Length: 332
Image: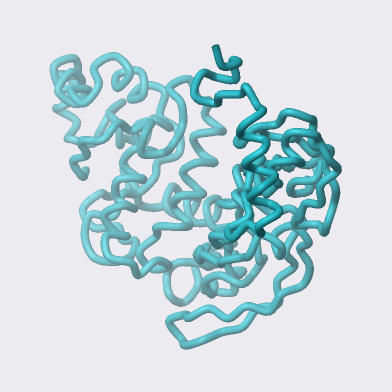
């Protein structure tokens, strides 16, 4: 059995109170992804061994109880408790790999594929091994390569979208560099897709073997930086440039949104940094309320004032008692 320093629950990605079915589902999902005959990434075989080891222990009520009690020292505790069972051999009796419990899962200890070396009929050979292949990979027995029907591995790739494309969605043609060279896909982008959201392309992943189905391709969305919009979740923030007199007197101001132009009511006496909310004008949400758009006030002054503008600003400076450095209090 491979030695793992990681917590078995962490390896399978389940909580410590997970039920048997949840543990089995987690194992099947991870095994499909990391099986060394489906996944050629460096380290896939070691990852698969670790996953299988964790499942071996947590799928058996007796060994799981020992692991929950003793942690990484569960095998030593079992050896102390089961001196009598040692006479039956290292894998006999009620031990973690014996034939007396439920179905067992094989841990590949050498080579890139499944094998039966060294375990015998009381361990992982015979019906238990056949049952594993049929139950895990949906097969009906072994094929000529010894594995039966096995689905292809799921794949993952990133795609970059502009904020406007994420807002509107629609059909897009994308090209990805794969191990077999560039490949194009027709993708339906959901309207309102967010950064980090995954889009599933069924059957576009790794090729199955023995007549097994192909895996899926998951496209992870990344939103490209935008010169105008700042996106957080489904909410969008945009700068709202206004003149000093609009900020002071209030105005109806046009604002650009990912869905097109809109107008926002600027209250009198607005300072830079004030955020005005346009409910529902952020990214749409097919399963709930849309995000909001926040227009952030940014007061702008004429870069090159005309003589008349200079005169007006000068007169305002002479007559106004407002001092922004004392937080809007009047001059004394």
